[in-house]
Amino acid sequence: MAIKIVQGTPKKLYKEVSSIVKECFEGIWSEDDLSQLLKLPHENKLFLVAYDDEKPVGYAFIVADYDESIDTKIASIQEIGVLPEFRESDIAENFLDKAIQFSKANKADLLEQIVSTIEQWIIPTLMKKNLKPSEIKADREISSFNEAKLILNNIKNNPKISVLMNQIFFEDNNKLETHIIENEEDFDDIKRNDPILFGSIVSLDKADDLENTINELKKLDIEWDDIGITFNYIL
Image (cartoon, rainbow, N blue to C red):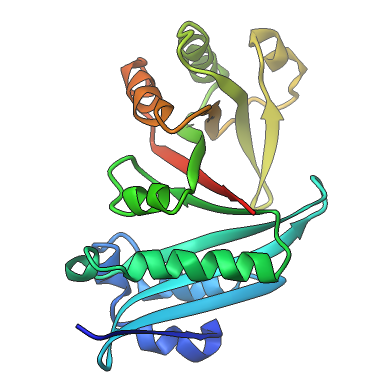
């Protein structure tokens, strides 16, 4: 198996991988989703495609942007997709090596990737390349403050979960309005009463905390809609 990785711009290489996106993500992500993702503005972009001979078998999309709110430039792995039969190869490791090189070249302070579940195939490779889990974001769709209060109390009653921030979200002209919630009294300061989402960001001090914290979140009397894990590489 002779794997070759080609580096270029999303515009040039999108067509090369559009036919394999669904298979890389087992149907939950499509070429149209990728196309929309690639259209978002970023200061710096990198697109990588892995070929087995002439056949595309994987791709990665990495960006880097300055975040004025924290005075930091952050690089982010937006996607790594590899066909299932090629995941045991070193394609993902090579993608991560190039992502780190790209991040350093663009003077980013941090490289991050967010994965959606603890079962993601990429996690062992991320940890092998020293990307460390730093936080978990768990979201639950809601329609009332009572639901939000129940979730808040469930979380606060578990001392094994180290919460960085709880938030509730409202729709606001196709954008999201956000409020930080620390206790029930904070709801009294919110003028609206039509929340759509509760989100909790949970801290991870070390890699060993990841599975334990996920298990604690699942023990709560909450059916989370999404649980995302952030992995960081300090540059």
